[in-house]
Length: 117
Image (cartoon, rainbow, N blue to C red):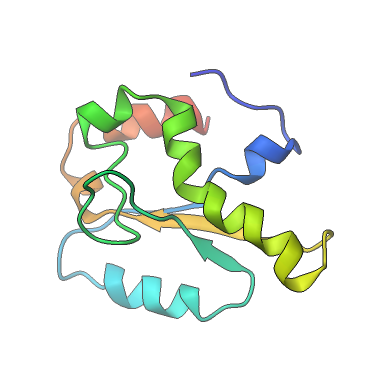
């Protein structure tokens, strides 16, 4: 992966929060609480992912092989809408996702670290 420069528009379309936890460990509750905050924006599943903000990017080899642009698209819908929606370009937003399967796939920690050192 080629990491975008800090502060660039592309960097802001990547998550600043990645939730990792086993099924039935409170990840859905955490996501529910986060989405109530006005500055939080969750990712949106693309192309056959099953569960809204569970993106499976780092644990799905097929999705991971599509690269950073594919992952960024999962957050682009929220980034594009925010400036027009509230007119506050200086607003610091937090993008996030959660996928319980990340806790069990052996390559997930290495993949996340490669993208977010």
